[in-house]
Each structure stands twice: as structure tokens, then as C-alpha cells.
Image (cartoon, rainbow, N blue to C red; front, side, top):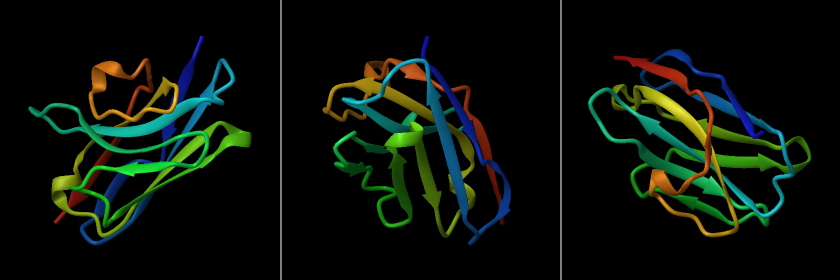
Length: 123
């Protein structure tokens, strides 16, 4: 059974930075894409970034200048560095995985999800 556990969220001031982590377990994640989404109250879940096993990296245009995704395949862990935080970044941040190498922003096509970690940015 796949388990994804996020950590690293919290309350930060605008302009600050956070590094989120997601540790995956329950299977081998070679040939899996690992990615990050977020969901603010009253909004749909939004794709942020993803990284394939091979290293291919993909970002939403809305965050590509401030977010950096990285992945440690040996540890089955994916990270999201968030810089220059804004109040609009306030949301629950979710880690997700999907098999293969194709990245999609459609949340329904990702197979497994973490429980989420809250990020709150104060102005």
C-alpha cells in the first residue's frame, strides 16, 4: 500500500521561504512521477510541479519562478522549495504520485495522495 507523508508546512511571513518534504513508501517508485498540488479554501486543487524518475521537471506557469521541485530517488522523497511566499500561497499542499513518465495537471489522474500539509502566509 502506497503511503505519502508530507511535512514542512507552517505559518510564515510574506517574503519568506519554506521547504516541503514528501516521503513515499509501500512500493518501488522507479517509473513513477512525483508531484505537488495545493488547494486553497473554496478553490480547486491546483497542479504546481512534478518530477519524473529520470529527472524531467515540470512546473505550472504560475509558480515556476518561485518554486523548485527536487527528488531523492534513493530516499523515495520529493521536495518543494517555495520562495518569496505570498499570502495567496496559503493553502493545503499535497504530494501525489502517478505511474509512468507523463505529467498531467489533472488531479484525478494521479493515483495516490498524501494527507496534505498546511501552509499559511501572513501579510
